[in-house]
Image 1 (tube, one colour):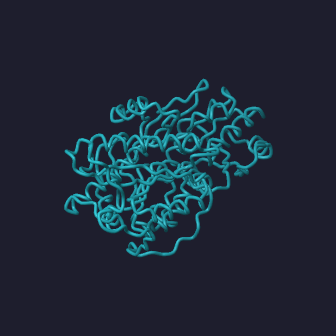
Image 2 (image 1 turned 120 degrees about the vertical axis):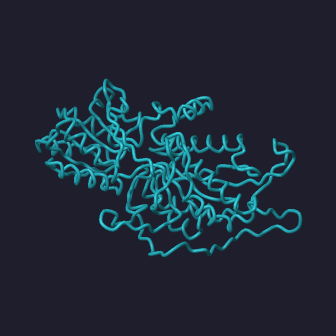
Image 3 (image 1 turned 45 degrees about the vertical axis):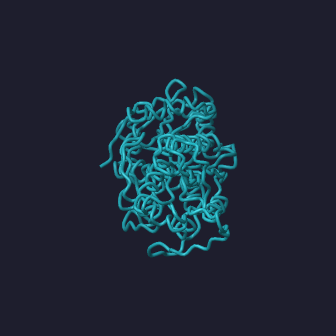
Length: 426
């Protein structure tokens, strides 16, 4: 998803990382000075009495309002990664803590959260956001602080490859990474599934006027038309409204055999319900923001049948690599499920902590001043590679995931059937 929910603010052109960062917090004198600008534990753990430096991982996602369920699942997954890293002493001499902030799926709040993370002299990097537009609003601030930003949910190609990603990809923010594929990779898989597998030759497209929704519809349309498909009509809904009658009537009268929706599940569910109520029985496609258990009751249960949405990677519950994550998440007793993005956030958090470990090791085993360590973690992050819950974790020259597997999932008999089709994109 995370998802672009609004147009991101214009970013200033950049060449390389800015190394300047004004730290407002004063350093304490004498024995209270902490080399990591953080805190130290009492040495009572398994480290033989040696003090451990506490390093904070920032986390940003919507933890309230409509998208709270998915955001809380992401937060829980990040917290699980932190707990396991501490238990297994992933970085000797370092205890990690997670500081979670709620962006309410709002870019301005995300930018404020980014500024707060930068000002906190114990924060080494940030995991998040969920919405791509929120991440876009955070990128400049975190880039200026040479602080890693890594997402397990953002899918907008522009975040890593720029506005001209189709013709002239350029990496503007070398501190930004993600463990999930982009819409430019996933949308063509959905286009092929609708055109070739479902034999839908004429389709209606609908978006929610937000950057994620319009972007994924654009990617889908381009791939669908290249295959020979025809877009019968394109419409937009207002995500703040709940009556989509005008759009439903337009879709029904267009002669379309199916619908592709660009947006998120809180609106996708009611749209599908209203299409069915109007007598439209064609399938409805969508991106990973549609793939959520809550879509089914929002669509009216049985009316959700025929919704197909992609997700990154093979279904988590089918991966041998994810068995430990799934079991440990369940054992932790979280109230919310890990959802579509939990395992990717878990791997993103682990990747960041591994980068911290590499930077500390290169710094003679010392954390030192966090502001000075941050750029070293950015450099180390580019080289991170390991086998994670979602499979191979690593980053290409743009900071994109090297794991390019897309699953198609469809609602059948009132429940999601995952992995209806699994495609490895080359």
